[in-house]
Length: 224
Image (cartoon, rainbow, N blue to C red; front, side, top):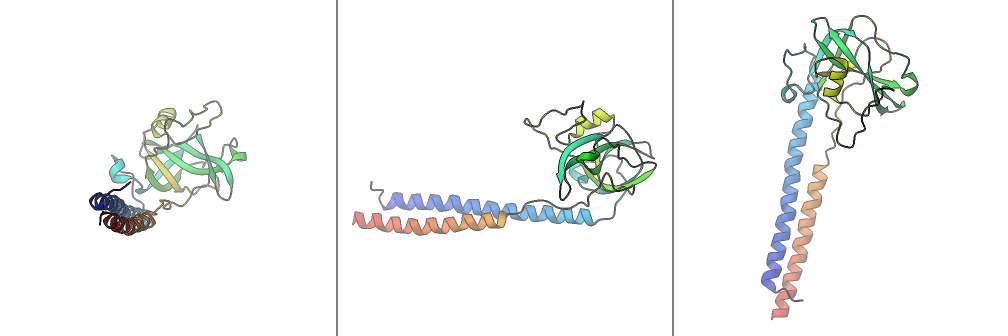
């Protein structure tokens, strides 16, 4: 089938435009991701502050805070796995602040065999961590097994209702009360492969351009 030089040129230009556009989009995504990572690094390095009166997810996500009070019961156990310990659970506890507010605190990880041992910081403690509004559930997430206290994801609204707290969670970096639950130092775990993706799209655009030139030359010779 003969395209003709004009159709070959249009076909080549259209393909190059699409591929270059995808490469530019990945460059824009790279700039956005690097800005987000820089913002998170700045937040994680900042000194902890008191809990805001009216925390806002858009403004205060990952804000480092410190609160003083008491971790209560019952706690909720969220299935997880942590290297090098293996399968276990996040311990989500109601936390009554000295100020009177009652919020949720993710105290950290316990091993599977410690699930029913009741590991919980006793007495007044100071929790240092970051504000977080988890959104880990979707239509495929199983419903929690309340009989066995087994949750499959952190569900802020449901957990707050279950423990009668504000829908507000702090992920603990430290609670100064024993080894278990084991809090984790906050870190950035955001994949950033946009530079490689941009290189791929621009390389494909270059290959498409070369192939288009060859196609146009072939169609031109056929016409001649």
